[in-house]
Length: 323
Image 1: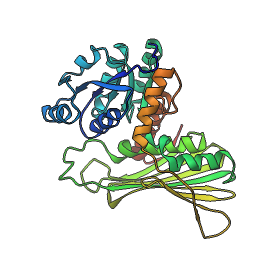
Image 2: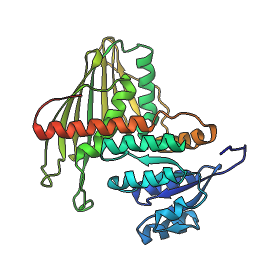
Image 3: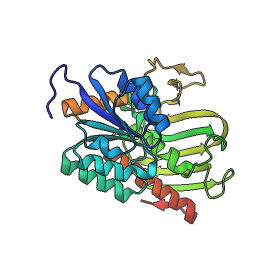
Image 4: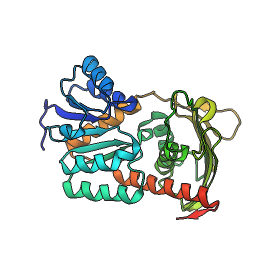
């Protein structure tokens, strides 16, 4: 479809829970976007969206969204539903942005890529840290060789999981957090790991790992170490990027970064904090209108799923997995 200046792109949101509401809120701020339809299995969530955002068309059946004339959909349903809902949306001729992970099985992720190519529709994945200005600023330094040759990245990605709030949590911390970390690794290094070693424990709920440590080996003699946990009392999203000339500490939550060059005294980088989700959705809308490419594409999403599978396998067999 060709869009002219002033045309509004019609979107639907499938899944109006915590993340779905965030998508709706961001779309509602865009003057060139009309939220035509919202779907969720919860009538309470639908009533909330209808009242707060004045959305007339709400439904408990997402097929109603797909049979409407929306140009694109955000899919914010539970992870295990992603494949079926994405497949149905693409076949219905809709452009799709789905929250991470793309799917729970890499085989299904690559199948969705095939369908997107066959239908000539955009399939994007919610890897929103590619839109984080602190990470983007460090990416610029890496590309300019300010840090020299990269050799080590350390991630600390933690938050407190409260079972009384999330009693039905079914997917472990590896599936929950590592898609973001693998995406950031690729974004900053331009590479994917070829060896993965994982160790984890299920302290809070049996058979549901809440803490894990992952070591990855990359081409070009780069190594990463990731600490992920639901057991710590505060939300931490930190990345240390170490190169032969300098290193940077990134605080991704508040979008701050400090560079260390030849001394223990760091210098804060000048970063203008941005709305990562808003910019990600803006990029999705612009890609549809301009027929342009996205960095958070389905190929990236599928590869992260593949790496999550390898991480789970390493945990289960207690061995390093070579890819």
